[in-house]
Image 1 (cartoon, helix red, strand yellow):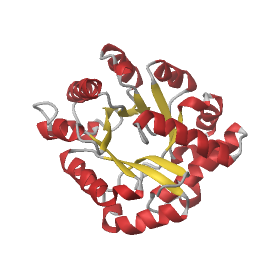
Image 2 (cartoon, rainbow, N blue to C red):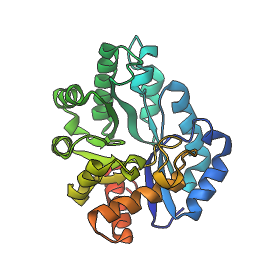
Image 3 (cartoon, rainbow, N blue to C red):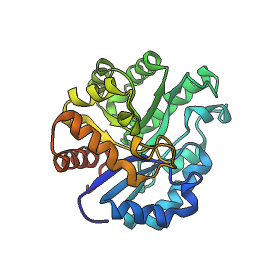
Image 4 (cartoon, one colour):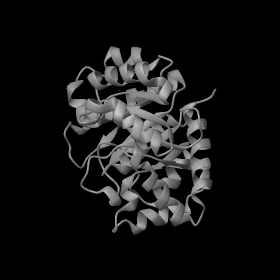
Length: 262
């Protein structure tokens, strides 16, 4: 995929059921005009999985992000695994994560989540690679940790953004981009659409979080990168801009953040 087009800045191709049909997922994405996707890991096994996918399908526009999701932080009581540190330095890895805090599900003890989040930030700063950050019901703690650990040195993206425009601006001050998912297409997401309309174009990214969070037009189905077009369309409507203008904006932003083309 060497043409300009949609970019999915967050998908989980190493997860079931997408991993069972990666060639088909890529083909459908290509047919919809998608040019790149960041394939994101959630633990050690999926980190190896995304690297395997990038090695096999990198020519189709795949790049990797490796790390431990806060849900899986409990599996790392000794800290960030050495394999993640080794993977993170590979050229195929464009970002570190997904990492962060999730106090909604609390699948891992909060103190373990916070400690591992700090380690991811430290690793990203050491490598000069951006962070992919997951935050749910933990906005104050996450922002405090990002500030304390000087995450502005590496920057990154707040993925699947669902907070307020004020919070987005605080994240922007730390050098973070704001990525919108299929959530922005839901009927009750008026406030999120307003946030998408108010932010400067220089920080906007789009994602699917596939196989999760299918946009409203395909709600109830397995999500996949091809559906990122619905996110673009909703944000373009919210901002009152042409779709091709938003496509160009997101391409510039993603290329700048992840170092694509450098």
